[in-house]
Length: 226
Image (cartoon, one colour):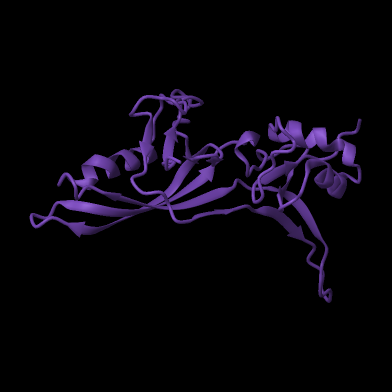
């Protein structure tokens, strides 16, 4: 079986795009961290040990990756070969989709991290830390460790972990799929009705309800009135 290589897909690209629309990782990451946050507001009452809390909305998900880039085989600078491409993903651009140059709403391009069947939601790079840890005798940097944090930019349920945009009148919850779970069992847990599994499938872009991957995250919409 061929080794699947991880890559960053840049806004406006497709999975089969030509070189330049994606940045391939020389080494696959050893771990991927992500976090989800829900907002809660508590009632501040004097003399109450456990005040009631109220749900006020979901926050965008965030993903953290540690990647290694190395050019010791060619002797070229890893900075100009790879790192400059990465730092360009934090540069503000007014020509990317969804921006408005006249109103000043320019922003960095949207990216997603992809590895085999794992895909992060479309997001923007929130932070990037670069550490050069190997150099040629003339000082040329040959190896770098890059820590990247990607903040979710918009929901796209086919990618897995999702949160709705702020202000939605029907906020979603998120459920992590456990081994052996099925959509009808998850539907029964949240809705008290196993026949509502189609609502979950539609919300998450699932075509095959039997192909749930343990560990993946599902958006759980609020129950429809119908």
